[in-house]
Length: 112
Length: 109
Image 1 (cartoon, rainbow over the protein chains, first blue to last red):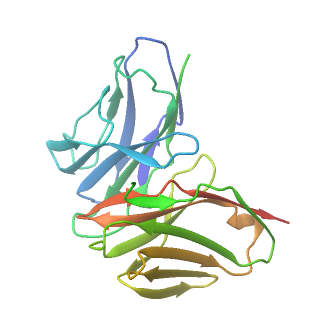
Image 2 (image 1 turned 60 degrees about the vertical axis):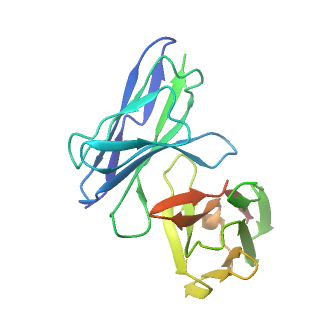
């Protein structure tokens, strides 16, 4: 079955640590996205990539970094510069000339 | 002003009621409108999408777009407890989606 796999489902980070969230898709989609979701708020775009080896900052990119070395993969690193990283992180993909996103199941990151 | 406005709720209705969920948007150039459903601790899933104005029906769900008033709606008939979720509206802007805040819907048995 085609879809998007995010791992891990739950992640705990100590203050000052960098952590990397994994996102893999087998839908052959060109575009991939990372969103952050906080309680009572909508989806806020962190980074997006429309093609391999290229990515763009979204609305809240500070404290985050990404790479897109393969079409299937778009990992997100939450760096120690992100002051409030506790949130639900969602990865999505879409065809370049299509509409509608497919989402993964999310990773819940908690700072301890 | 946000580009897409949506009341976060929660909206609580009895089972079997007709539910109306709504969003407003600011840019008249938007053409594609979508509704996503998100269950707790899950990713959103595409429920319906419409192009330009008009209605689109899928089973108990009807999506409606009124471009003259920049208003989009999702109606759920014969609501079920399994419809309890957060419903997010989104509009397409150059293949990127602009999201509403999401409305939490609770269907009481």
